[in-house]
Length: 135
Image 1 (spheres, rainbow, N blue to C red):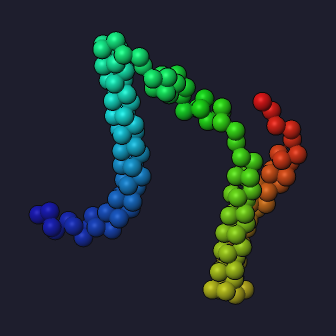
Image 2 (cartoon, helix red, strand yellow; image 1 turned 180 degrees about the vertical axis):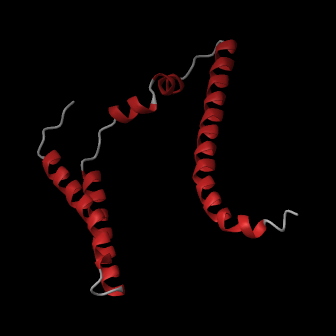
Image 3 (cartoon, helix red, strand yellow; image 1 turned 120 degrees about the vertical axis):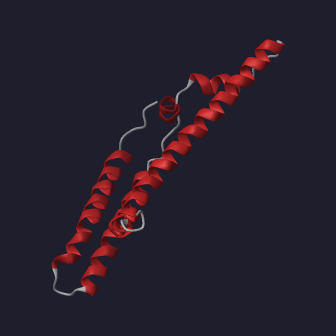
């Protein structure tokens, strides 16, 4: 009975699996993070019960959230330039590929989207690198 309906379901299996892969990866990431946090808390509890000093590294990680840690670290302004160059390269590559595949068709214009995003990021980088760094 199940095998009679497999022909109806089979075209949907690949998209369903493709959508499940990132969901499973995200769940695995957060479950792993929760497990490591549980282990860290258990270590702190055991050290406190034994009367041992708690290393400041364990407490510093608990006090700062991921958002605060990211804001406290100095950002590299050239990261924007790298993303801009990648987008420009992808845009030009797509434009060249589609122009070669179907000359005279409109498909080459698909590459305009990443190209324009890359140019916008490059302009943003130009403006931001002239701004003074704030503490």
